[in-house]
Length: 289
Image (tube, rainbow, N blue to C red; front, side):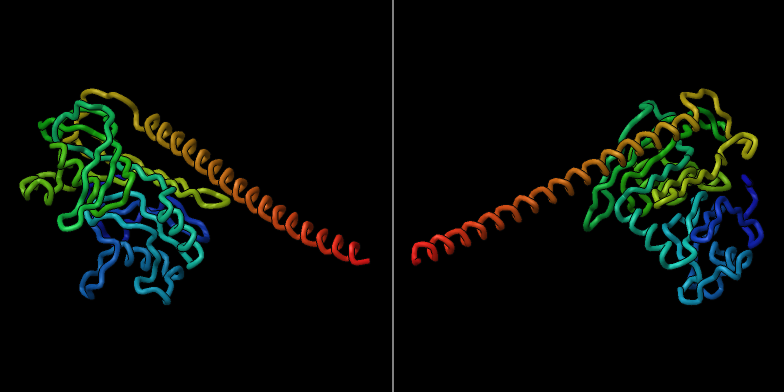
């Protein structure tokens, strides 16, 4: 459901729906929620409009949003439908086992096809953060050179992807804030949460929100050179993450096994000491006889 039309209460696009979670394709010009009484057009209100029976009166917003997307960012947004489901998702985000990948059009042609962007964010207390960038296509947007990239945040700082792209001299197309207010011509900021994988047990949640940066959606975008396909790139990313997760689980099992062995050894030593004490008592009693 890719469109250049503004958001409305009606155009909520649901990507996934179960008893525990609903994942929507957030529109590109809408807030997730708002405390302002006059702001009626939010994802929260869209959900209330389409699924009034799912709203939880025990929460402030009515729905438990598992993560955040900026006002101008579109794409996969996960909402937990009960407290237990929210807790399971929260642990995955806290443990950094969630895999997220964003599509973006950035200004200029990015020459280095694969790179790790490592720039701290924050003025008073800078925090380290990393983003993996993979070049997909070079082309033109409204006649200017741009690059379609896949961005994987390895950390979760506010505006991380926007700051990192700007830091390497390739700000995201339509990003008013990080273009010093000059990039105002595009109808939207070209940043889209394309892929979301939450390793829930027993069934992981895996959702794709499609690709809005296609000439059929926005004719101003004209791809000229494809370096790699989106599908193959995401599959490789997910496979790499699966390998890392398996390795982490194996290391955790090995640590747990080592802990159990040490505990068993300690108990054995304690038992041996107790047996030695009893033997001494028996010897003393026997000698006394």
